[in-house]
Each structure stands twice: as C-alpha cells, then as structure tokens.
Amino acid sequence: MSKTQELSKTAENERLKLRAAYWNNIAVGLLLAGLFIPLFAIFQHINPDDFKGKSLIDFLKIIVPSLEFRSFLGGASGAVVVSVLVHQQALGLLKKLKD
Image 1 (cartoon, one colour):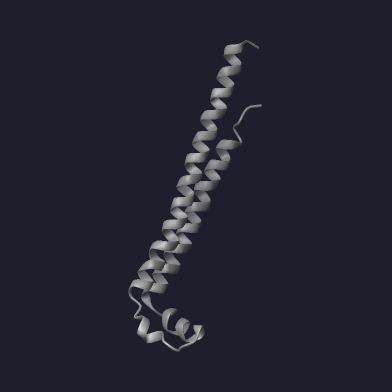
Image 2 (cartoon, helix red, strand yellow):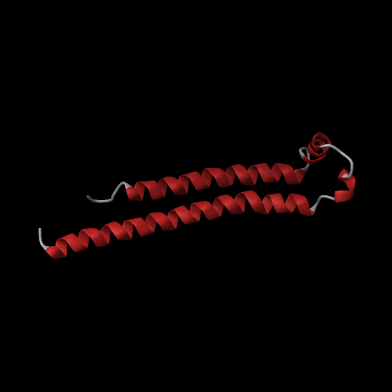
C-alpha cells in the first residue's frame, strides 16, 4: 500500500468523524431546544404569586392540565424522537470508518 492511499484512507476517516460530530451536535441542539424552549414558555405564563405556600402537588395540579404543558410534552417528545433519529444517522456514519 502506498503512502498516498494510506493518507487518503486517513483523510476519509477524519471526514466521516467530522460529519458524525456535526450530526451529533445537531441532535444535541434539537434536544435542548425541544426541551427548554417550551419549558421557558410555561414559566413565562405562570404567576408566581399563585403558588406561594403551596406544595409541589398543588403546583402540578395547576400546570398539568394547561395548554402550555401539553404543548411542552408534544414538543419535548418530538424533540427526543428527532434527536434520536439524527444521532442514529451519526452512528451510521461512524460504522463506515475504515481500519
């Protein structure tokens, strides 16, 4: 095997690793955005004075039936599913690495 072929294989492996890292970063960004943006929207619509002196159970009884919470669950579950799919794409790229 010549030196140029070895360099080509190494360059190809590095290119695949960079693409996999890119897709992994996209997956993390989707997951974080899908979890935190709806969560911040919920807290933006909450009046803190309504929960003074109440327990966590009382807080959940008010929050869970709200439209914001249902949209949070939808967004969060969608973000998790898409993030897993994008991560699987990255793992598929890493399986193409050459020895």
